[in-house]
Length: 224
Image (cartoon, rainbow, N blue to C red):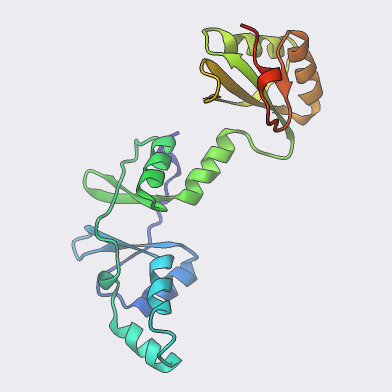
């Protein structure tokens, strides 16, 4: 999946001279977490988050009255607190790459640019929703894990066993087992009605299936 498929295109933008009070009101009204700051030519020049605004509120709040605080914040503008060093991505960036960038740069949103034009924004919430959808997380499925050797044909072998029983694999995710090189976690979801049947078939074929967390993986390691 690529960012262009899930990014928000109904962008909420403000000018650099927008007051913090106005910015706060827009975020509350639109129920969003980020404001994109653009200049008169439509060029992206900054990003302001609801967290940035809350921090600006908190700093003088202990020494000023509500009236004085609101007056002060009306004099302050978003260009005074916005993030100017902006990390952006293009619509053809993969969701997993966007997630990695957010993690590495410790940011919660990425503006999307195409041909130097602002075309969208994607947030950590969007990425999480897509990843949950990709792994098939829902209440009508059963999740189980099989530890397999890292060799060609392992996924096909597991899929064949379930195919013969006409059991559809709703999602499949793999990741390496750090403490046991050459071993991968094969995490699958099937329909709830077929959970026991799938596990029984895989167990009968010699696979060791885990339905819950286990501290010691040794009994579930595949035979060499």
